[in-house]
Length: 479
Image 1 (tube, rainbow, N blue to C red):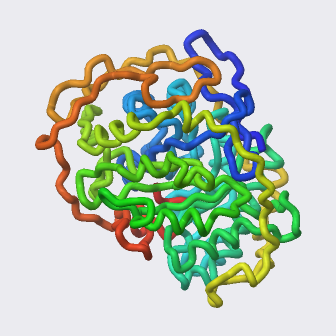
Image 2 (cartoon, rainbow, N blue to C red):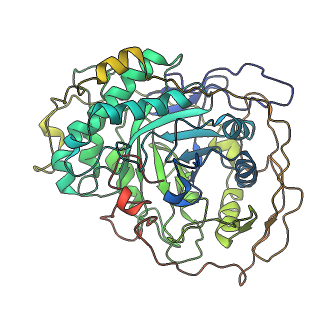
């Protein structure tokens, strides 16, 4: 499956950094090198749910100056993928997307939003599955499908978060995946993977995986099955281990995958500040036979105390100790080895959908999916109207105009995005701006979680909904 198209030269100052990727069985592959691609990702939702304001035309990719600041800092870390939540398809995102592309970063796009008709709900999903919702979902696809660094779309996020939702949601969530894939097939010039971001609730996790990845027709190209599968997991806390964190159970439970799997969120914040020792395990032989990396939660500091960077109202920023700790963990890794692996031959095929796949007798095993609601098939056939569109544009200046300070209060000097060469993906060491740590200054206090931006305590194996509290029960809301 083609994941991103070859870039066309758009100007002397446009760095067309990201190469074409393909999905081959359980791996992302760079066909130019034959190497596997590991997601080194960052959850990006500045301002949490408040960062999305439809009336003000505001979302995470609407302010080029802010995107330049954030892309530069993430480039320094070594990030190669951002996960972006809560996007408005009616806003122009060309400049921000072009900045992240020049910095060598892909985008994982959540198609849902906190507005009315913006999400499939966990409660009575049939009530939110209607044409107006799908029209807005397809509009997000339209707005981002032409960007070559759009890596994948998430059709939902933690819509299944307990056994009760496992009884009712699965057919509707799989139907949404089907509808988005049909829309991409008809209206995108290239295939773009569509998949689900699951909650790491062990009571239903493996049943959820089997439901979304099995084939209804004993065929690998079943349009309703996910192209990828991701999970939000917070089970590694502090100086844990591969077995203590139960990462070994995840690898064992998902080892027969026929599709790429990765963490769509990770990064337990207890104790705080974090030390990110899970990084060494995620990008090692412990996990790379099954997992293709992961996305750290999250870039900006919000009330839930998961941030790496504190943003101020004037656009300035302060690096928190977590930022430096994560950079130090990445620096310990051999990315020549991590991103230089040749994909082994895989004969894995999705299982045929049947009730025998499920361990919990109360999990929904009905594979007769709801038909698209009235009006939806016409939208799928003709496309949304009016159609938003996106394209890469010339980036004329890569220097960051905002002041950014280290944890010790010193100013980060000469901060800028380093535009990468064609077909180059960001990695640690390509942007060597100096950041320093302080063991006593800038350490964030353990913040109280609120309903707007709460993310889970990772120590618990049965996790509550992540990232957006009241909104997290809706599809694609957390990141």
